[in-house]
Length: 146
Image (spheres, rainbow, N blue to C red):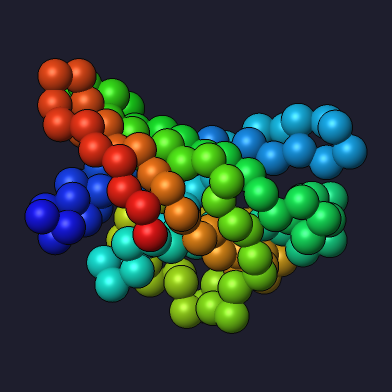
C-alpha cells in the first residue's frame, strides 16, 4: 500500500516543476514561486535553490517551519497537487552542480536560469512530514506521513 502511495506522490511531483513556498518572519507572511527537484529514493525530500545573500536565507534560518503546494505545469489536466504544512527547510549538503542534471531534466528551460545566475545559487532541502496528495479533479486523494 505505501508503495502505491509513494507512486501516486511521485506521479503528482512529475506534473509540476514549481511550488509555492509560504514562510513567515516576524509576523510577516511571504510566498515565493520556486523551481524544485526531487529524487525517487527520497520521497519525503524536495530541493530548491535561492540566491546567496538574499533575505530568504534569514527567513529559512530563523523560522524553518513553512508550507508549500506544488504548481502543475500549464498543460496538466485536472490540477493535481501536493500540499504540506509544517515542512522543515534546511541548507542542503548537495550543491547546484550536483543538482543541475536533475533541474535540466525536470524544469523546462532551466538552462537559461543556470546561465544567468547559476554561480550565485545555494541549495535548500525541504523535509516533508505530513502531505496531502491530490491527483486531480475526480482522481485519488491521499494523506502521507513520513
